Amino acid sequence: ITVRRGPVGRRWEVRSQKDEGRPENYVLVIDRRPHRAKLRLNFYLKMLFGRVLLEKGGVLLHASAIRKGEKVHIFVGKNRSGKSTLARLSRQQIIADDAIAVRQGGGKQCAYALPFYEKGKTTHWPKRCAIAGLYMIHKDRKTEYISVSPREAVSQLLPFVRFFGEAENMEQLVERALENLQIMVSQIPVGKLNFKKDDSFLRLLK
Image (tube, rainbow, N blue to C red):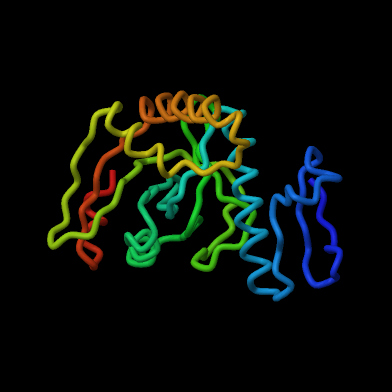
């Protein structure tokens, strides 16, 4: 990957080696304005990280995560589903506000905080942590935990796996993501967490 100032001097360009010399194939154009540039580059690097993680047997999930004791609880959901809200309400260390890496480590599935900027993080925990539970979240009028089967968990988690890939390789990458998810859900508890906006969900964390 190369990063360099664009031809008009008003933007930065990020290209992969295969796109060098082909101006029609910019991978990403980063706005000169610092805040937007940071967010765009941050997103792009996360997606590349997700691609590498797939090849290493892990997944990058669109999720928030808290560290409680020596274990991590992961909240997976769409934008504005309440991931950041749950993390804040927990009053625990927030190691991820937008994305978390999950990979086998020491014979068990572990969570790894990313070395990227995230607005809601309260700590940059450098170590791997065992995962106590993974929760697919949904706002509701009552708080409850519902277990799901491994097959259902894989199908519902797949849309939240983040990675960068070329169109011609996408089918193989999705297959790899499915394989990694199947291994992951066979080793950690996965369920649906319906919650109302208070800390009552804490009693349901495994």
